[in-house]
Amino acid sequence: MQIVQRWILARVRHRRFFALAELNAAIAELVEDLNCRAFRKLPGCRRSAFETLDRPALRALPATAFQLAQWKKCKVNIDYHIEVDEHFYSVPHALVREQIDVRVTSASIECFVRGKRVAAHIRSHRRGVHTTLPEHMPAAHRAHAEWSPGRMLNWATTIGPRTGDVVRYQLESRPHPEQGYRACSV
Image (cartoon, rainbow, N blue to C red; front, side):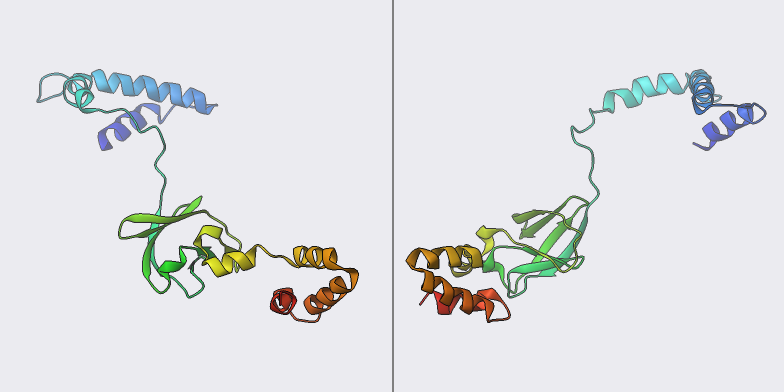
């Protein structure tokens, strides 16, 4: 590489270029000349050496570009989530308190246990937010997650207008509407 750099720089150092394309064309011409120049102590040139040694060993480039990834170990919290850059991603609830391997790329988060992928998420950079897949939740949590304050009120008003008032009171009188679900469902 050093000989290429010195040989090309020596030939273009006194020339003026007014466009990058012009410089690139000059460099391409000089690289071609260098590749065809005979070796001093060996037979042939760089071009012939490439054709006989390197070209037969070349393989096609992969169909997908290489994606840089970082690996880290995470412990699954009791809420079946792991933390990556202050964002929380769910994993199957059976892995609570286990140490798992996490592959972090610019676009995704993948979780592995003993080499087997157990979860994959699109990466989010929102701090303090949870990304949870329903299939990672225990059955009891999944059933609870299907309910919302709006759904609870709609259900109550189908029974009667006063039932709707009682349910509305139960949901609005607590710091979090979810805390009123048990009182409403009895």
